[in-house]
Each structure stands twice: as C-alpha cells, then as structure tokens.
Length: 248
Image 1 (cartoon, helix red, strand yellow):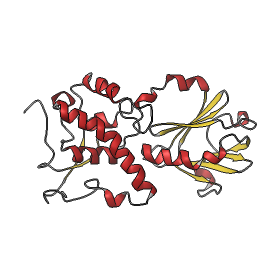
Image 2 (cartoon, rainbow, N blue to C red):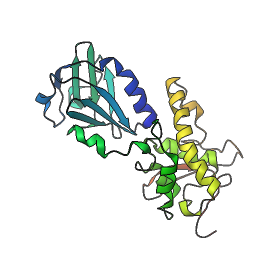
Image 3 (tube, one colour):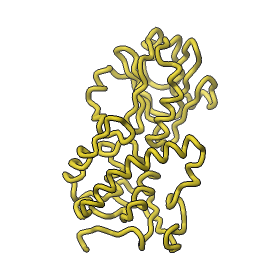
C-alpha cells in the first residue's frame, strides 16, 4: 500500500494539469464519467494516502488501496485495471486498481487536515490529545490510525518504533511523556526522510528493520509478528525496543 510520501510525489508529478480542462474521461470506475469533461482541474489535495482532485463543485477521491498505481501520459496497465483516465490538452493521467469516488466539494470541509503528517497544517498537540484519549491502544495501531497520523503506513510504523526504541505492543497510556513526544515527532520526521529517499530511489537501502532479519544495533535476530488490532506485520528488536505494558 502506498504511504503518504508516495502520494505527495504523485501530487507533485500532476502539477502540469492544474488549471487545465478535462477533455475526456474513461475507465471502469463506477462513477458518472459524463460529468467530468469540461471541468477545470483546480487543485490536487492530499490527505494521507488519499488524493482529492478538485474540479469546481466536484471532487474525485482516489485511494490506491493495496495494489493501486498511476501513470502519466502513457497507459502502462491493461484496460481491465484502468479505473480512471483523464485526458487534458497537455497530457493524460491514469489510475489503476484503485478506489475512485466522485463527490461533492463539500467533502473537503469534513476532513481534519491537521492530522496529515506531511502537511503544513499538521498539529502535533492535536495528535497528542487524540493519543491521550486512547490509553489502551497499542502504539502499532496508533501509528496506523489515519485519524491521528494520516499518511503513516506499515513501513513508517516499523521504522519509527525502532528509532524511538519502543516495542509495537506497548500501550499508549504507559509511554513516558518523552517517548510519547518522540512518537509524535518521528511520525512526521521519518515521513519526510521517506519522501527524500523515495525521490532518490534509495528508500529500501535505508530501512533498518522493515523486512530485515538482524537488528542493526545489537546484532540479535529481529522478531517478525502480526501485531495489534490492525494485524499488520511488525519487525522489531526485543532487546532494543522496550515493551511498555500493564504488566510492567
């Protein structure tokens, strides 16, 4: 599943279409395609892993899900995977194997933009308040909660928890104040590292624990386990990542 930084890169690549009129729209997404031609692409907004293509009174919401992708100016996947093709006077935008919804522009007012870790609107104090309201939540679930850390995915989760030395099954309410602050800070900080490495094509080279087998600090074998209510894969070091739980 693409994480927030990858969606931000997509936004940057589509800037040439801003201000352009949709000439034609096609694809197998179950939306009213006939409403799109003639609309002006006014703005590309992102909220975590979701894209919002703002076109006057309408918004196209794109979620790439687990296996979604996109291409620009050239169709790279077969028609059966093509959910949406937007043709502009200066090129083409394609989305594949993803969720596509056509919504009224009022939906933008319902979004808590402060929760997006890559946004200038990010509010760490607001994230802290949300975390404190869920003391029994595991940190692995908290980092993947898009209402708290929009844009954070499983890779970022694993790397952040290793950076701050916290076991993924630790409870939010048992974290010392400094660890809670570190969690909030690194969720955003690592996301920008992810973005930089992704642009330089060196992201995987900089993973410390995600999909790895050996701890880069102590050399012990890493634990691989599905953790939390989210049941996503966690890679962590039993020695270097402390478990803050009710049993301690």
